[in-house]
Image (tube, rainbow, N blue to C red; front, side, top):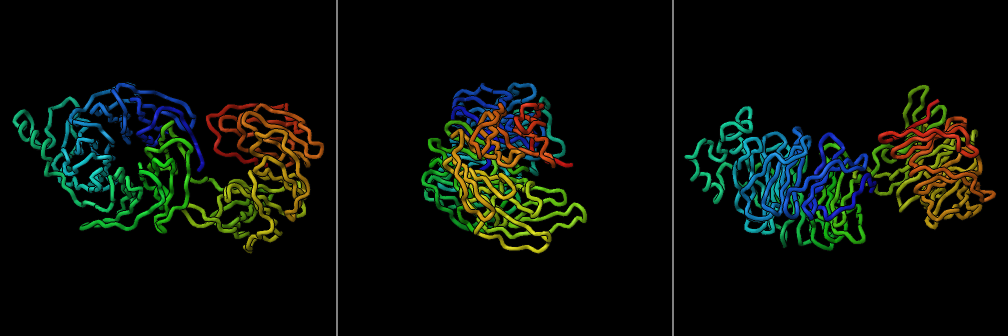
Length: 561
């Protein structure tokens, strides 16, 4: 898990990503709605007009609108630019579990403990129809991203798929009516007060314009969540029977494909990954699990010590996920998107799939140079979870690369390439090892920070030559320091310039959480890159003569001569 942002708050029950901006909404059990910028890590706004827990929240894709639903039986539509509630929709008779905008129509759908699902027109501020059929609490309901379908999950142990084609044909005619215009009874298509009886009947018994298409039965206990796949005819569901089920549907029927077991408590939420063929689920067992759709097996598990998970959300277009728990929420990725890379004066080396590839700057050739060991890369083809790649600039006689990955809890691999890198070769197990971080120390030495925070110095045959105690137990990463025999040790709030031979700290820099260290080709200048700042220095002996530049956020950097 690559954590991008984490917040501390009351229990998070609802989450929603903004389609275009780096924003996320959280609805809390104490009745507050928070608007966060997860890229900058700042709280932008809060809305607190609900009485009691707010369980559902959503962004509109185009308009500056937010919808929320809570235990006060109210649905509120907000304008986040005006920073106020525009109106409140009344009709549900019990707690509202989820609310969701339609991608195209001026609709929103709500699910409630009153055993009904309601579709509302947010422009005319009226109820379009009521879907009845569940005989227990309706825990969630959402629109299909493309088709005229709704999926719902209920504690009556069923998942239902509803066809709203008739409703769309009846109520969506050209440009929808603007708020403040003549009131249109969307349930019957009539205006005025003569439709009161029909409206009451629709509220009590539902409307024939939205019908049940499939009833999916298979869970042994109440179903807490169901989600559509963004492009395939698949549904995922999670329930109190601790199971995640995968369903497939066609024009005439729907059926269970498989059941995935592994959670040890109620499954709270289930979504499809936006970019890979994966299902993400979380549970009251304090874990997030990742399931491979094709293999139907669990491939990753992330746990928290004390916090139960309640909700998970996937960004519709980016490789981002968010999960809400008892003490806040986290925004994360399952894996790094940018490939690990390094370069010398003639070539660029980078990792793609399960190969280390070489791109020649002069002739434009891009070839696989070495086949890397398979370690169960999640979500795509097998490969390694590459974190960084470093080229030994102190050795001019051969091309030495050091690849660090997240495999096995942190590992490294020393790779030697010849002059001709056009023929791929298999990597060797003899030059691998485990460690939190690794970097080159000299032309023929490698430094590894092990899990005990000791610095192991090894030769090019991966044989240990020396063990040096780290001057600080808080050291979590080491970098090349531009000079043979020296290292940069990263702590949370500073960098230490450390000499391994004398075991002395030569200098100390107050730099917040450095992510990348880039040296110029002659190792005379260095750039220290953190999340919100860049630091430049031209004194590699003490690194004190430096320039600081604050930026919004640094995504990556590369020194080019």
